[in-house]
Amino acid sequence: MRIGVVGAGVIGALRAQTIRDNPDTQLVAVCDVVPAAAKAAAGPDAMAVTELARFLDQPMDAVFVSSPLHLHDEACLGALERGMHVLCEKPLANTVEGCRRIVDAAKAADRVLAVGFNLRYFPAIQLIRSMLDSGRIGELDHLRLFGGHDGLHNFRADWQFRAPDSGGGAMMDIGIHLSDLARYFLGEITDVYGMMSERVFQVPGSEDNAVAVFRNEAGIAATYHATWTEWRGYGMVVEAYGSEGMVRGSYAPMQNLVIAPAEPGGPRRTSRRFYPEIMVREKLKSWTSTTQLSFDEELRDFVARVGGASGGALADGHAGLRSVEVADAVRRSSESREAVHLPVLGPMR
View 1 (cartoon, rainbow, N blue to C red):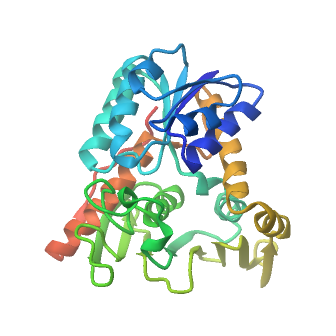
View 2 (view 1 turned 90 degrees about the horizontal axis):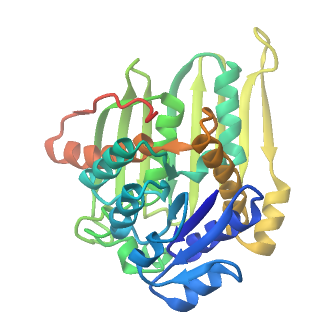
């Protein structure tokens, strides 16, 4: 599969390396407005360009979009119009309307649209998925999701946190992963009730905190908190509670807590899983090493999806759309003090 990458920042460069490393894919071109960044990510065998139109004219099967969020629409729509498959970084776009345009274009072109929710591939998250699928903790009763960090100094550029380019604050940052994971475990999110605030950093349109309750069609709930005032620093926790036990996945560091019967009907036992190899590797090579491995798995699922396979953890365009719709619903609910209902989307294909 011939793939090009738009955007050669930290994430785009990792995507390009992943494509080079996979024996089933070829990196054709990298596009970035900074020539040196495009050349570095392209390596010796791919073309480095600074203009999107020239990039899209190259013979490619798929495009990975890692450009700044407010530029996603142009790159995704341009690739889909030319019949290319697309994997776009999260969030899919900085508005609900932008997400819908991209999703509609993918459907019209009958192309695969995937969204880079790579946390689905983290080992701690995959353990939750396997525990739910196996019924080890019984029937799912509710989820608890939390994610945050300690503020604006964590961002490399203003567009990452200033609306309208950012699309919002904590909910479009770490919160976008949380809302996707809620949907990954609950199924479709159909009701949202929440509150948000901008009291700390006071960036207009960019919330510091958002607290919400989601519900799926069956009435199973998830509590959600996305924050930029987690003064201890970055952290993410997802907990699934069932009729027979619970499982927690967290990062960083990567770890799990399981309280569940070892076998059906048996007593609940507590166990913990640590990932020392990840801790050591991140200490030596930084968090990007874990992200790179998740990108490797995501790419394999993307290639398989383009080939007609189903299954896997790959997030489709509807997952990207619903996560932004959820953030928008929390804002609307915060203003109206009423729950917001969202229609069922289902899978893209």
